[in-house]
Image (cartoon, rainbow, N blue to C red):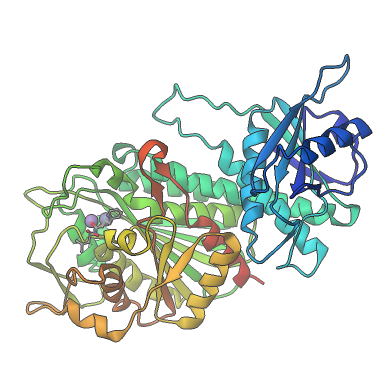
Length: 501
Ligand code: BES
Ligand code: MN
Ligand code: ZN
């Protein structure tokens, strides 16, 4: 656990192993005169020499000559870009915060960050600005220190950092401390989402998720959880969700978190796709990179991460989080192409492709949440490969039946840096779901696959303001950096806490 604090006292510099400062172009950002004149001179010379490029996030490290009692070993300067007055969205600050995190991680002991003088045009008050800065730094640091070693015990944490002190103007230290706390809680929520996503399919079945949900609820008095097993889902006539699990030995689970951070009756609801492994079922996927289908529960993981962050930070909101968990396998009991099932809503579905299973579990979860009379419902799902074709792996796809809600989510996406783009949900696309044998088919053909998947879901979301986030491209990285990203926990948390205001 890393300790964070903000203070106006510069005494922390002397007892730190490393000092971090910021530059804007060739100028030092801070007006703080606390660093010794030697240090200031050293930094000035380094900046004048052009050793630090003007690209945000670039870093120079100066190593101090070891005096007898000198504790300070490193002086680090991080580039903010052309100006310390950051524009809207302040991507450069996030990049710089990542550099701070990388540089701090290996420091054995304490790091002192001189954080005055950075401002973002999004904030009118210096206090809000400081709160935001604290949050950005702590989130970046928490993300940077995460490692996956649950099934690879030989992977050891290299983090030696124990304490980070931010030196700010006296009037802003309190807000910055609040921001640091939020950033830490949020970062830890993001890391929970990453951890669950990274777990292999055999270590993270629907039952495993249910157990983890119960363990989470035990930690926080305001969080409760209810787990619906197969029998309970049969009673509710969730024929669509159940059809996905039919080929698997693993029992499906519908996990329902309720976080009562306030007494409001209607909650905001988030629903995550929790396919703990997606083979495609009888419509079997090709073998290449199929291992990555363990990440098909990253929507569910983001619900876990978000619920944890809400609890840890005591956000004053009523939030319900639902996880529709199942494993999609081929077997003699599996659903076959052409099978028709009846969803909880009563609408029948012809399953033309068993690999379009995410929408089949989500549709029953959406019908289920009607009972909460929600203020808004957001589902999060690694739903379509087509979304990766449309938007690549940088951007979440957003679709909604309510433009006011879509705009709130886009605003939260902007302020959290969680890139998101809206796709249309025009009625014209609905026709592609026509079936001769059921109320609808579960696939719409080759064109606009992300939109037709959302059209399918929209038929189960008529009773509330609903938005759908397709995170197929953003939830994990492939290749050498293979691993879950924890997206879009930051966006969800930002959206939900904005509603709290
Ligand atoms: N989980 C996949 C979507 C996916 C694929 C996400 C690759 C990330 C990377 C989903 O269940 C799926 O298989 N969707 C099909 C739908 C199709 C059959 C209409 C797809 O995208 O191919
Ligand atoms: Mn699939
Ligand atoms: Zn899937």
